[in-house]
Image 1: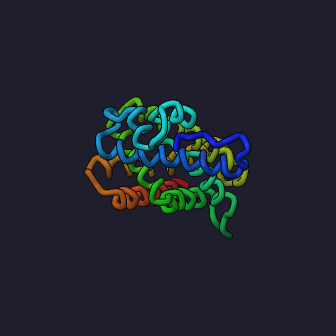
Image 2: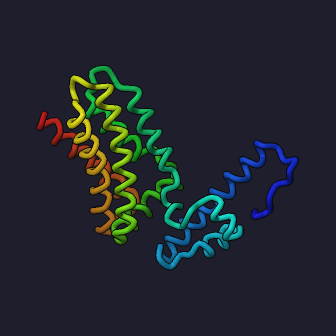
Image 3: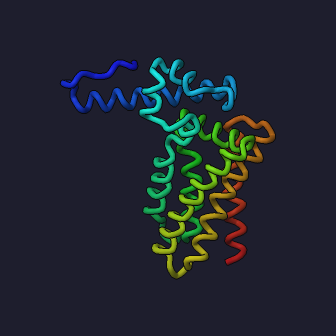
Length: 207
């Protein structure tokens, strides 16, 4: 798998091989994180499990923690896909809540495992949790800007920021609580849905 394609390889074939190698690294990392924990897992171990060189690993990821952020851009894009299709009569707050529910529901199985590992690691590792918080805050700022632009009569700049933080932080906090109880992935997912619903009810009461 670590063999490089020849110079005459078709661009499409090279891209498929690149994506296959990247996915093999993600799968290997998920397996090793689950088997022996994040701290005990090394980049060399991930590369060996994926049958590639350590150099190849670093062509795809800056470090082992970056494997767990795989799919982040796709998750943000999924939220924006929903935000771009409001239903008749739907408020901006309701729209964001629906987008958050969709994000929780629409993970493919592999991505669901990554999400579960991210939350589990964040519950145990303050440094990783801080990094996740920074990424989440950046995404929330994008959602808030979109909501303010699309629903200016309902949400001013401050209101949009509060709504984005309330919905997304509730989702995350509920997932952490569920993980600390030792719940399985599907129960964690249900807790995240409940967190979104609680945030939505409270936001409705305050408006």
